Length: 297
Image 1 (tube, rainbow, N blue to C red):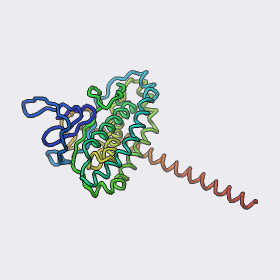
Image 2 (cartoon, helix red, strand yellow):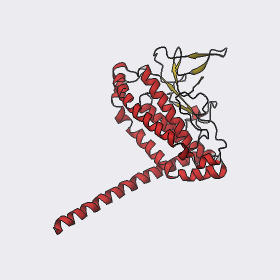
Image 3 (cartoon, one colour):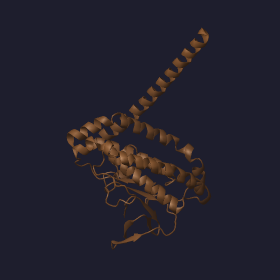
Image 4 (cartoon, rainbow, N blue to C red):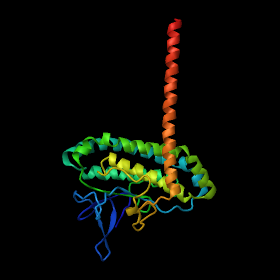
């Protein structure tokens, strides 16, 4: 089992990582490994199931009401940092896209940087979504922070890399709808957090599912994984039956949490349709006004 600080990259001969401690062998000895060259690793688990980027979040616990009340205000500096990192990650992704077309993989420095940026973004997103109370650090390396992700360096299909922007569209639509729907009723969750000092399990599970899906979509878009994002409604029964490593690995959603996820999607869809209708009506009204003006003249 690999325990990741901000991000871990596994290889077949060990762990190619950023400050990662792993358990080696049956004796349970630990060792730290640094990037020593890229080695391919299959994108499947030992049982043959597809392996997707993992999000680890602790179970929902007590949160300080005043930090919940001021959460987004307190995170404003982090939002600025994330915006700057996202701009840098965009240009690095472009370079990585050309590199992946030639090499069939991301070069080590690009993989490490994009993985670290994704870990940073995910920590801030989790804090903003009230999944954790602890303030995220201003650092790539956060071994003590409760929110972690795990990535594996695997070979990339050059054809899938070539058409990545087209292939990601369906998942991007789903992620956009889910996030829009969550934002539409996030004020309700905010009030619940202030009153109770915590998030109820269904709200926590549904929110974690949206955050994880967004993280997986970003990993796929930036070519950190070749596996298409899934799991918005929780993990499959086989994965969900495995022993729990964290509250989100595996992610077991109750019926109430799944209903909330569907509600997010429906609210997001309604919001997009309403926005499109309003824009269309406004454009049509402007056209009629312009036509009437020309006629009058």
